Image 1 (tube, rainbow, N blue to C red):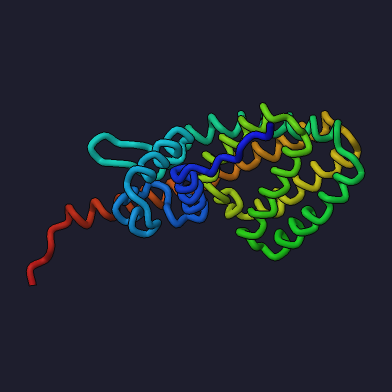
Image 2 (image 1 turned 135 degrees about the vertical axis):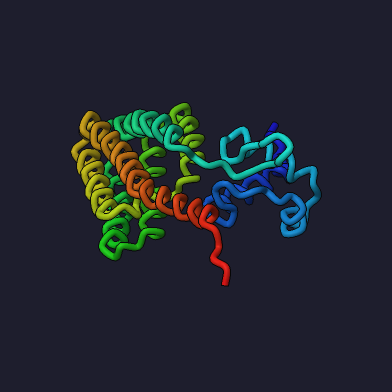
Length: 240
């Protein structure tokens, strides 16, 4: 007897919608979740919204602060240092398994994805590049055909979506990223599991390097801005 199709529960649909809003930065990192506004804009009651919020808290996309409410999570430098080595290991293993299993038909399907990536890199189109980059990562993950591995990667990838494509804003990073992807593709074409794993790990860790460099670059500006704010408060106003 065929299994019955179960309709998606409302709170799951709401959770999907909220994930999309976070990834599109309609809900920004650190932003307070206004439940009243969301229930009105989504046309739902508080119950499915709160169930959806629990799901996203468990996924690491939201956090709850006692007596303050729910907020979109923010990834600290320590979070990134902890997550990226794991992603490098997991996605490296994906590339390893994909290189062992890949067919000529698979390579033909990957070719236009890399053509798109090259074109967006040449244009410097960060949003389009980010989307094409994500499609390639998912395609390689699918080729690995390892549901246990995919489950772990999917969860971490959702959390990393909080930082979205910030690493691509670092000068020269988009071109470096494209070159790294082409190297991964070359290893897949060569059916070289070890090579594909090594260049994929390097690709992920280079993203972390770019984020570190951006944080280091932004620190002096943030300190200067804070110092000016303090001076503005401490300096007495002149009487006219």
